[in-house]
Image 1 (cartoon, helix red, strand yellow):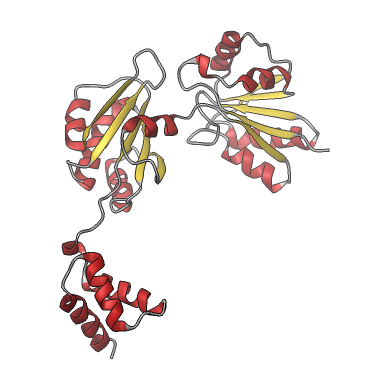
Image 2: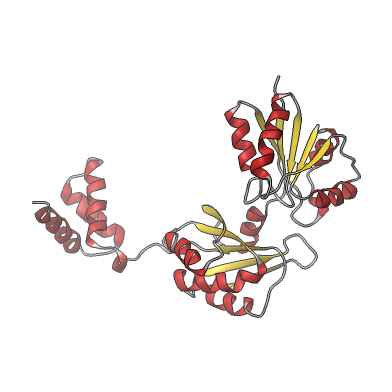
Length: 282
């Protein structure tokens, strides 16, 4: 019988937020793999628990080398508990390699749900949360950072990022450049901790504020791109929308009329776009 890999969420600030199962898993696991064994020691002391199993480090620097060792333990029937410094393992933290290797070998993987900086920041941001995407950390180099931001400039879902405090001002300035200075955003700092702060406002204003210096763990939430207005839709997009309706069974005349109403332009504009497209296609 193979063992079980348990991904355990840990508090992102307030230790009182630790899920009840975390203490039980820490006490009973055969192996506890921790991103920082010193922080793990502080956590176990706060929870009043002593791990019975072997404690090993598992961080970015040794993740690739240690994964085969942990997989061997799992194949031998061990219960391996993986914890990172805060939040859920493998979400911008060590863990993905071990999860992928375990899944590949049909080893059971389960989780102890816990606090999430992503979801907490989303809920506090005041921005739309019905659809969102998590982008993790942006590249450190300015050119690569701008390129990554340009890739999602038109993304309509709310965007969530992690960022280091000493890079926050440069990141917000780059976001203002790519997304527009008036794009609404929220900077969530030190979530669930004593000095928790949520600063909301346009990206340009937040960039000025951050230039004065910010400390702590940072999560940035940015509102998605607005729906394009009629002036933003080119002829190709109008034709595409007509074609979609035609393929769904609408007659061309009705499809053109429906698209005109949908985007708020005159029927003649859509009709001319369709005719021009037909001519260019030969």
